[in-house]
Structure formats: C-alpha cells, structure tokens
View 1 (cartoon, rainbow, N blue to C red):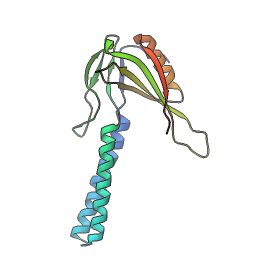
View 2: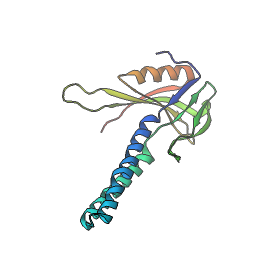
View 3: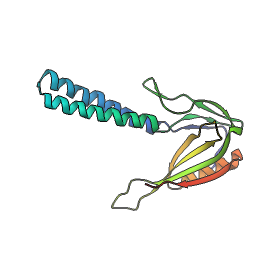
View 4: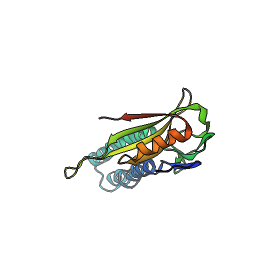
Length: 171
C-alpha cells in the first residue's frame, strides 16, 4: 500500500452514523411514543415505560458521543491539521487544530476482532493512530480491516520517521 503525503483522512463517518441513529431513535420513536402515551392513550404505564426508554437512550447516546473517536484532516511531513467535526452543529469529542509532527511519538495500530459469525472465522479490524506526546492528543487517522492497518501504519511510521507500535485489544 503506497501512502503519499500530504495524506487526507476522515474517520468520522462511522461515528456520525452511530450518533445519527441514536438521535433518530430518540426523536422519531421515543419522543412520539411519549407524546402518544400522554395525549392519546392516557396510559401512565406506557408513558413511564417510554420515559425509561428515553432515559436509557440519552444515557447511551451520551456515552457514545463522549467516547467514539473520529477526526478529519490532512497529514504532511511538517504537521497534522485536524478540522473540527460536528453532527448537526454539535461538536464531536475529537481534537481540532494544527499539531507539529514533533509533538507525535509514534504510529500505533490497535487490532481487534470484528463481529463473530458462526458461519465463518472472525476477522481483524484495525485503527491507526498518531500517538501524541504528553500534552498532545492522539489522532485517529484510519479505520481498516484484514491487516491493511498494519501495512498502512508501518508505511506512515516510515514516511513520518516515527516509532511503530501494535496493540491487540481484547474484551
């Protein structure tokens, strides 16, 4: 896999799909369910149940929003420029700004198993990170699968003259 600089990256689409799903569920299912239970059926049990579903949705949506990683920007030999990312005007919890390459220590590839299907062996997927030195955020620059991230990570490490690391995620 040949990587050339400058390299544009965008790892936000997966994050945006998940958050749009949570937001859509809350606005298109839960909220109308609460309103119907209150105004049409006058069922306090159904209203309470829908409020509980809404509370659980908000709780998990908040967790997803705070912890899902994704960024978009461009990598050059001198710096990484990360554009602010947002969904419907709400900023995502990803770094933004210009970071000189000297503020990064390594390229790390996190490997994990994908979904396990009973009909076939599970496959690996990878996330490729620019690992920031203390005070600099780590930046997710690629999501890959089937070993592509290892090749990509090694190529970035060579091009940017950074250390290469691999981590296998479990659980």
